[in-house]
Amino acid sequence: MKKELFIGTVTFVLVIALIYMPTGYAQNLTKNASNAMGNASANANQTGANIMNKTGEVGQKIAGGAANLLGNASEKLKEGIGAK
Image (cartoon, rainbow, N blue to C red):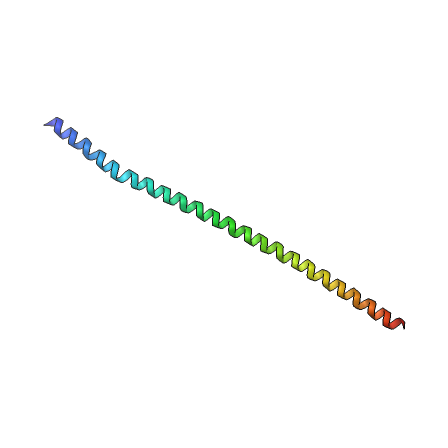
């Protein structure tokens, strides 16, 4: 009687372990994959923001340079017209 009870108890514990352990393992895998995708997305967003910032800085430099060029050209024209 004790032998059958022991075997039944061990079998029950093994069945429970086989049912619940893979579930926890699968949840960890899902969580890890989700975290990895979240990190990759955050890195991509940060890289995109950096590219946009650099693009904006370059645009400002180009616009500033064009304004200086036009300002210089305008001054030269005024000087040329005033000299006549």
